[in-house]
Amino acid sequence: DQPSVPRELHLGMFEIGKPLGKGKFGRVYLAKERSSGFVCALKVLHKSELQQGGVQKQVRREIEIQSNLRHPNVLRLYGHFHDSKRIFLILEFAGRGELYKHLRKEHRFPEWKASMYIAQMAAALKYLHKKHVMHRDIKPENILVGIHGEIKISDFGWSVHAPNNRRQTMCGTLDYLPPEMLKPGSGDNTYSEKVDLWSLGVLTYEFLVGEAPFEDTPVMTQRRITRADMSIPAFVSPEAKDLIKRLLVLDPEKRIPLDEIQRHPWIVKHCVKDG
Ligand SMILES: Nc1ncnc(NCCc2cnc(NC(=O)Nc3cccc(C(F)(F)F)c3)s2)c1Br
Image 1 (cartoon, helix red, strand yellow):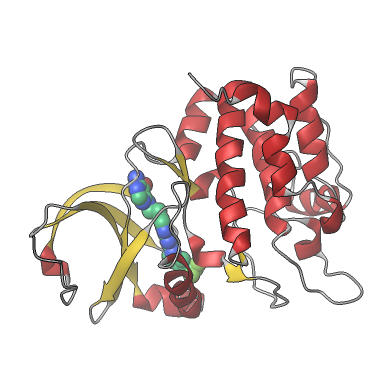
Image 2 (cartoon, helix red, strand yellow):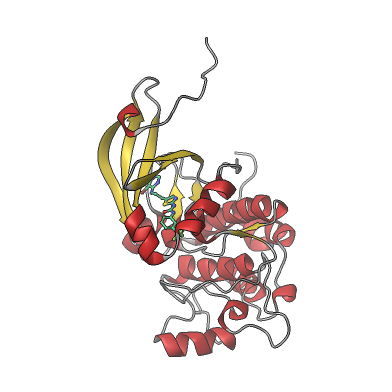
């Protein structure tokens, strides 16, 4: 059949379906490309809102970074287009929606499920870090679930190429911020992709406990993060506790590397290879 020559993308090409969710900057709809029947998710961003938020260059960076990423646990960004008022992101549709909704409904995940998800996150981060991309905003709200139950890291609005010393104003929850992004070191305040390892530790804790390890008032959360001051409940298995403790380490260089995560007993014991 004819190789598909990329046509000029525009809204009329899509039949818009049900709303899938709404982020802080705009809504997402199920959509079908009319000529091919291809199903995707269409995120609509209003240029005025992006200007107000001063984040338009972040969206450009997201498009540039994510368009080149191909991994089963990273949500695809197929393309984008805009009209006079809006920017549209053409995204892979994740058939089982937003992970945080599953987490809230189930309160917390059984260890086998949490371990499978963290193994997939480690594989995705290994892929990203090999390309010197750090996501910088790993949290349940930025993870989607595919039709086969596999997870997909999404929303690369805060991703950058490592190393990075730009100070971005953060908004949203502090819970997932690593210490080095809260108070820059006395020396160089650059940070590396190791920031994603800290967030992976926070994510592991939240999957198993149902709340973030440093959850508190904003001031107390910052203080507890910079002291790695958290306690792990007794119902968490010793292996899971060990991995969390090896990720939530103040010194970025001392955090367990991704290769070792994939070989960690808590990960290995739950991912049944054959059958
Ligand atoms: N079932 C589903 N299947 C697929 N997708 C779904 N939802 C969309 C998930 C997203 C993926 N990528 C995104 N990207 C951004 O939002 N980027 C963005 C937007 C504004 C400002 C900024 C920033 F510049 F401020 F960071 C960055 S949202 C759902 Br529910």
